[in-house]
Amino acid sequence: MHGESSCGNLRVVPPSTSIRPAELAQQIVLPFRQLARAVHFPSAGNVQRTMLHGLAPGRTCAAILALASLASCVGPARTFDVYASRAEKSAEQAESAIQTTLAAIDVAVAKQAFGPFISITIQDANETVDGAESGFASIQPPDQASDEVRQKVLPVLSDASDAIALARIAARRVDIESLVDLRPQLTDLSKELAQLVEELT
Amino acid sequence: MKRIFEITLGILTAIGAFVDVGDFVASGAAGSRFKMGLAWAIVLGTITIALFAEMAGRIAALSGRASFDLVRERFGPRIGGVNLLGSFAVNILTLAAEIGGLALVIEVLTGLNYLFWVLPLGVAVWFVMWRVKFSRMERTFGLIGLALLVVVYGVWHADADWHDLLRSATVPVVPSTETHATYWYWMVSILGATITVYEPFFFSSGAIEEKWGRQELLVNRANTYLGFSLGAVISLGLMALAAIYLFPRGVSVDTLSQSSLPVAAIVGKGGLALLLIGAFAAFFGAALETGLSAGYIVCQYFGWPWGKMFKPKEAPRFQLVVLLTLVGALILVQSSINPIKLTEFAIVLVAVAAPLTYLPILLLANDPRYVGDKTNSRVSNAAGTIVFAVIAVAAIAAIPLLIITKGGA
Image (tube, rainbow over all chains, first blue to last red):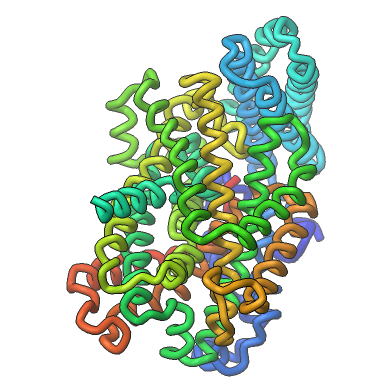
């Protein structure tokens, strides 16, 4: 199964990598082939007739839903480039979560929003960074160079997750002072993540 | 004077009811990732929905029959059936997304998990659909939805680089952190969020509910051309706020709270309250429209009595379809699927199903048997054909883009 997605036979190319035209064309054609197979279209020329006379709507819907669900597949990376691009995407997500938390702290300090709004905003950011961390941690590094990327990225993602979790607790307690105290740590982590993204690009 | 009041009220209602959870999510996400680089997609979507809703309203006002009724008569039960299946599936997903959006609004107001609110909100939506008169229901939520205009105020007061903002709208550039595939994915999403499948059916069925005739054609045009265009300003405002406040910080929007952050930061507590009240009313109104649309299209297809013009006991199948659709949507949301992901998925599927809805309307609006001498003008036909070609291409590209970009990640 090496090199295949964990939830089907469709190869998943991460969005942040540059996709070669031939690969892109293959990615576009593949779902249609799978869909055609799923609804038993006899041939391209008969598609119209079959759709009108022999279409099983349930099977079509099931095929479309199955294809769409592939959008959320997480598969192992085959090469360093793919692994690095996943690392970059995870770091970007974590940076976005930290920046959201920083913006929420600013709004909280200026008393421009209600307590629950701040708390939910930081909670959502916490879930985002947790998802990025666990998603990246679950990908197996394909070579030694990837091991180094993993050792570099995972601790920062973990630190980001911990810092935002502390902010979440402070927001829930409406403890503005603690939120302000967390600001420098979050800013440093944001810089660190931005640097990582730049290195990985 | 009464006529002017009616037209103005219709326009205001259309503005407030234009935005739904799909617009809220897609505009914020696109603004935070591409600045105003996808503003043209909102404009294109608005032209499309305005053109086709006007046609649907005109067909209903002149023929005295709603669009879906005519689709089955004109194109036969088989094509009508495929259309019904596609539209119904998208409708139920959209209804689930609207209820999920409503629950998220309450979550950010109270701090209590959104799943806690799903069932009570479902009961509230059902109660309003069951008890409240059509015109009162439509106007109440449409007018409260005007509170969303706070985003325009927010843009006005933002400390923005206007030249850069305008440039990003007129010369769209894909940032180095994004791919062309994600750009086109979000273009399809914005189009899907703007050209909702339920809207033309709801609009034409509403025209029958309100007993429109030839004299309402002016109201129809004003509502669609003016009301929808001004409503799109709210979507553009949400995109602009995300572009001004979130893009420079590297925040990529994937929650409702992130979309609302710029208003809190720029306008303050009062602005945030207005935004959330407006969003609640707009999502609630959209939930009513999608729920009722499900009942309209099924009953119109099978020829059963439909609409709020009948007492529930006179149209029991209509009420049953509406109730079952609502139950189905509630089960979807309560299953703890992320409402924002559900919304993103629903708007992409809207883009897939849209041609099924829009082509029959374009053909019916040119059939003198239904619209008499008020068939489409050459301009309407040319514009309608061009935008239809675009949505057809978007429909073909939607699922491959969803897979390639892993849902626009």
